[in-house]
Length: 539
Image (cartoon, rainbow, N blue to C red; front, side, top):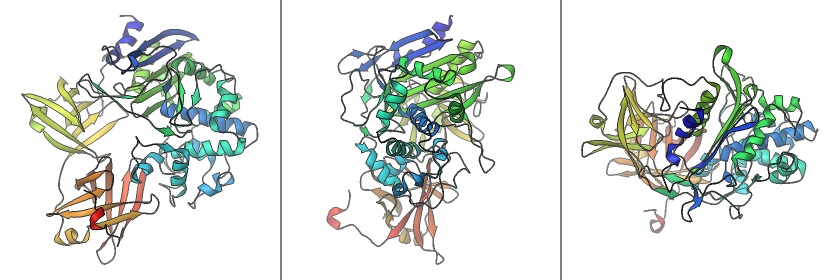
């Protein structure tokens, strides 16, 4: 099988008739070696994806926002080592000093804007403006951790950097990037989308794969930029990736600043430079530095990876989430560099795989995702077992050892002595816990119900006692039972997932909930005396 055939096989889910898909562009030593388009940009109008189709590439945007800030730094217009209060004093209400570099390196400790938005009652399908995000971030009185002590990905960092670029340069991020990056590099199809109602010719729409050969349109109504909202093509991104070996829009010193990994004040480890991940590909004498970033918003997915030493550039843009693009880009690099392993395209997660077998049908039931607090179900129908997440259902097909494939999805299911795990590759691991309703004491059943308010998100939850079962209620996200995660942590799988710890005063009375998610740590919702009017109580 040729390299072309091997790469093409990786994108089989995009070759199933009327389906979403994407662009795949691979260049080696400056020459295209693989350049194909798959699927449809618009299923309703039967519009196929072609080389001119424009994609929202989500977090791949961050490297361009970073380069804009670094160009200003290079030109002496700002210093990335200044406290951000120098440029945006009105948007900072926490005490710790945070520099622009801290934000570019994702080591600032600033809470993530998307998770804050959800806690405030905003759905990701709502219209979200730059002003909405900056106002919410400005309300934060504390950080996740002391700056420079940890790495934790936060989209807020790059929305704030975008605002700094605007204030320092006097023009919006898109205008600055257009003048200093996109036009000089001939990226004629690339821009930051500034308004959700902006007309974008040749745009690919966003879709979710329902795992049963049907798809749902998943609109994205962003009116914000910096952390996301770059629109581009694979061909334009290939031009950009040359920057990492032959910079033309900045000096070599600025490029090295971009690729420098910060040293943390603790024993923690990070591989994140300024808006890009800087890692190693291969081992021993074959080890080479990679520069990459993935992106994901609603159904849009993207991956941009370059190995400068090998002069290998890989870009994938998609309007559906049924392929893990970051892992696939690495697989393409393996193929192109002749170091492909012999386990085939569908590889296992070594952390969970064992040769011992098990019967998925004997473990049907409801499970919580420990890392996120969400819920899944394993069900059995007509001697077949299925993985169910929300309204999506995938047949569990035995693969090998302790692994089942969730057919037509990105997931594999494992079970070993340590527990049950759902995985979509090395960067997406979910521990499954059986749903366990906590045995609350009579005192807790009487004391925990109430309204819990957070000033930093201007939002509240309510805990109610419903015939001896505690439930959490949210005005937009419904009502669901509370489950135990162990170690005094609880979860509630509302439309979004809530994990929290109960805090009591010296008298043993519940005073607050400390909510934690992947990118927010211990944000406080304090118990209040407010009560709903009977006529306004949510259903």
